[in-house]
Amino acid sequence: MKSLTRISALSLVLLALPAFAKDGVTNPAVKARMDTMQVIRGSMATLGDMASGKTTFDAARATEARSAMAGAAAQIVPGFQAPETDPVAEAAPAIWETFDDFSAKAENLVTAAEALNTTSLDGLKSTLGPVAASCKSCHEGYRLSK
Image (cartoon, rainbow, N blue to C red; front, side):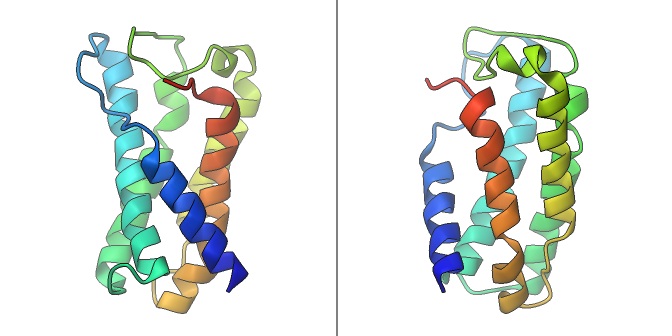
């Protein structure tokens, strides 16, 4: 039960952060990255709401969210390859200064998302923690606070 509480709390924290897809972005590469992150955020919201009981568990919706998240997560490393910036970008310069670490963390998200068990509520609850932890690991060092 502690794990579910942690997942719920972390999900709420992540959802309370400013939205990635901001108005006014002019750099198409940055916009594409923001859109990718928005897919991950939306998928996490869907899964977190199910895991916490905020919404009813639906295996088909959970599987769809898992697939969307894993697909978007796989686009993180290619999307950040070039050090593109924009006045509304939230990507910290540390991404490109320690790109190997950033890439490893992004790959951890892909692995965690692909490992999500969306066949049952208990399965989802038991596998969502690593996804939330992976998101947090990148946000702590590689995302600017705005």
